[in-house]
Length: 267
Image (cartoon, rainbow, N blue to C red; front, side):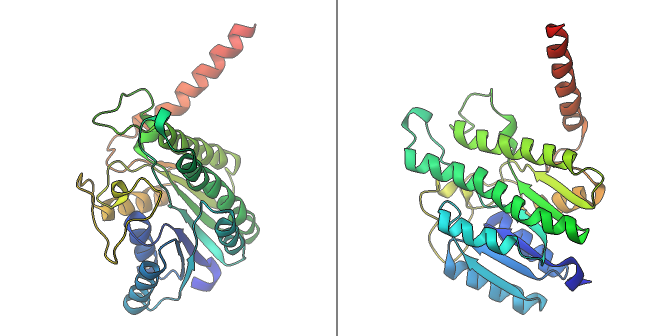
C-alpha cells in the first residue's frame, strides 16, 4: 500500500505545522520528503522520524524564495512517487506596507504564492495519472481578515493577500478537479503555538530546538487533527477550531450572489 500511494512531500518541515504534519504522516506509514532551509534542523527531524516510525525519510534543503532552490523542489515534486503534497512553508513579512522592504516583500510572494502554485503544478499531473493523491495548502485565518484593522492583528497587507490567494487557488482548483480521485484542501489555522511570529522571514529562526512565540495559540497537534479529519470528510476549506461550518458554506453562496448581481447589472 505504501509503495502504491507514494511518498509525502512536506515543505517548511523543520518546525511548527510542517514538522508536526510530517511526523503524523510518518506515524501513519508514509515515507516522506522533508523540505526546509535549515539543514541541521531538517536532518535532526529526519533522524527522529526514522528512529520512531521506521519509515524512509529524504531531506531536501532549499530556500523556496530562491529560484534555484524552488526549482530543485519542483523537480522532486514532479517525480512519480509523490502521493501527498503539503505546501506548508510560509513567511509573514509583517509590518507597515509603506515601509515593507522590497526584498522581503518579494520573498513573501515567492514563498507563499509562487512556490505553492509551482509545487502543486508539479505534483498534480502525476497524481491524476496514477488515480490518487492529496494536496494540502496551508493558508491562514488572516486570509479572511482583510477589512479588520491592525492591533491586535498584525500589519499584514501582503501576507494576508498571499493567503487569500492560497484560499482562492485551492478552492478553484478543487472545483476544477471535482470528480477526480484527488483530495484538495486549504488549511486555515489561526494563531498556532509555533515559532512563526519569531521571524518576519528574512532569516529563519536560529537555534537547534523548536520554540514557541510569546503569543502562544492552538497546539499544533490540534491543527493537524483538524486537517486530517477534514480530508476524510471531503472538506476543501478547513478552519481549525471552527465548530460550525455555516460561515465556510456561505462563501460559495455569497460568491454566487455577487456574480448573479453583476450579470443582472449588465442586462
